[in-house]
Length: 173
Image 1 (cartoon, helix red, strand yellow):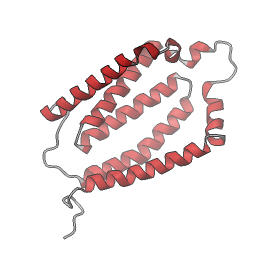
Image 2 (tube, one colour):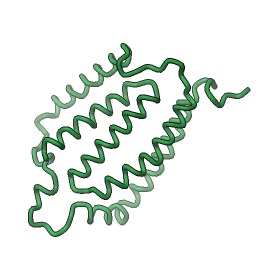
Image 3 (tube, helix red, strand yellow):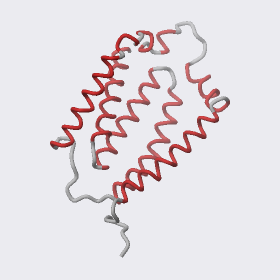
Image 4 (cartoon, one colour):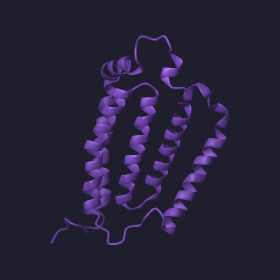
């Protein structure tokens, strides 16, 4: 199970690099789907399958629609792909930054972080996500409000970035 967690973490980092380095919203939306899937896989591995499912459905239902809308507004005749030279250069720069950061903090990692919740508690009666959902709604209410505010701010930022100079599907005539 630890190897699966390593695969999920590698996919999360690779998806984040793909999102950060891609100027086209078409391929960045695909990277965001990969990132959300890998992040939810990490949550499932750490014992929160219900929370993972809820976050994945909320993400795909909300934010992916926003990115599809912004991709429709930013209609490019020839979008940059992941294999083009400027994007590939950005991927290499971000990958070097990730490897450098991992190398700098390598001594602070602990091996117990990678162990999944089912491997730690053999005789436990409760699952890992039953207490987590209750905590999310009781003491984590402020974080839910902050998360909703961040999603609303992200909506406006994406729409403003994708608007550009007034060229697109909804330009003023």
